[in-house]
Image (cartoon, rainbow, N blue to C red):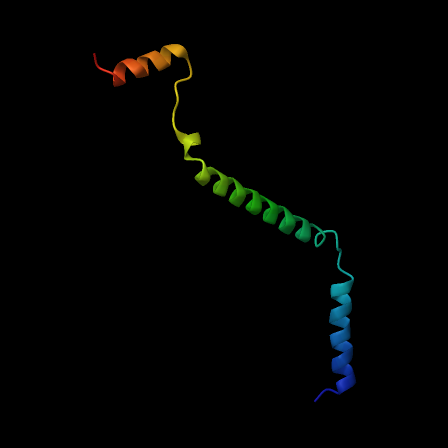
Amino acid sequence: MPSTTSMEAQSMQSNDDIAQRDTSETELNPLWGRLALLVFGLTVLAFLTAIDRPEWFHLKPATGTAAAMVYASDHHS
């Protein structure tokens, strides 16, 4: 059975390896997480705003000619 100090030395060695890793990759993770949370929040805000205003999704004629054609097709004389 290995002694306790040799096990502690191995444990400390593995912790030292983790501490000496390049941190440039780990710095991006909080940034991506915050960006994803921001995008999610803006998407929810846009969705809640859109469902509150159904008139935004009605098609309307873009020109006077198109409006006249819609009026003529809806009102038979």
